[in-house]
Length: 363
Image 1 (cartoon, rainbow, N blue to C red):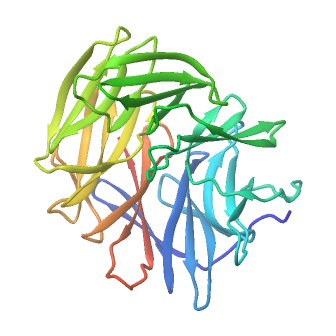
Image 2: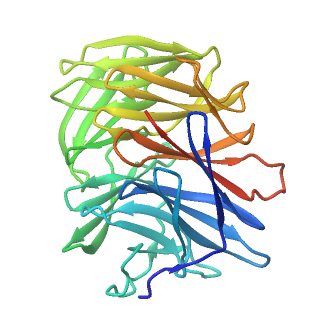
C-alpha cells in the first residue's frame, strides 16, 4: 500500500487565549469533524474537507502547544474511524469508494508501505473503547431494538498486524456501559431493579458477575468499575451532578458534586488524561461543556452558558474563544494532565462550516 501524503488544503492559525491555546483549522468551502485520537502526546483530528465537486479525509496532527505538525490526505476511503493497536500504533478503518456497498478496511495510519491491501469487511457501527491484551475493542448498542444484543468488534492483532476481526454478541442484558482498565473488560447495565455488573474477556465470555440493588439510581457514565475496589459512576437529577459510589460489597452511597440548575441532556464516555483523572463532556438545553473528576473529587466544571467560550463554575476562570455557539465533538488526552477539546462553530442550516477549533488545556 502507499503511505498517506502531506497536503496543504487546510490552513491554520494559533492563538493564546485566557485559559488555554486555540488552534483554528480553516478551509475554503467546508469541513466536518469525523474522529479524533491521541497520538504520541499530540491530537490527531480526522476531518472531511469539501471542495467544489467532492470531499476527502484529511488528518491533522496538533501538538499540546497548538502547533500544527502536518496535514495528511487519505486516499483509500471515507468515514474514518481511528483506533490503536496493542503496540499503541494508530490505525484507521475507512470505507473505500463504492456506489452500492458499505464495506470497510482497517489499515495503519502511517507506515503502510509494508502492508498488503486487506479484504473489505462489513462496517461496524460501534465506537472504539480501547485495547485489551492483543485486541482493539469496539462496542455497539442497537438503540432501535430491545431484542438485538449489544455487540463487540474484537480486532485481534499478532506480531504487530491485524490477524482477524471477531464480531461478538454480548449476552443480555443490553445497553451496557463498557469500562476497560488493566487488560480487563467490565460491563454494567440495568435489569429491572438491579445493576448487572460483569467482567468479560475480549470474546464475550463472562468471567465474573454480580447483581446490585440500584435503589432507583441510574448511570450516566462510568468512572471506575471493579470487583476488588470501589466503583464510581456519574448520574444526575435534573441540574444536579451526582457521584455514585458502590463498594465491593455492593453498598451504594452518593454525593452531590454541583447543581447547575439546568437539566443535563447528554453525557459522553469519560476520557482518562492521567491516573484516576477523567474528563466528561455534556450538553444542556442552553449550552455544553465538560468537567474533570480526580478520583471522587470534582476538579473543574466548564460551562458555555452566557459566556463567549467556557466558564469554570468552581473558580470563575473563563476560557475565551472566538465564537459564541460552539459544538464540542471530541475531547482527548495529549500529555499527562493535559487535553484537547475539539469543536466547531454552529452554522445556519444549509451553510457549511469552514473552521474547526482545537483548544489545548492543562488541568
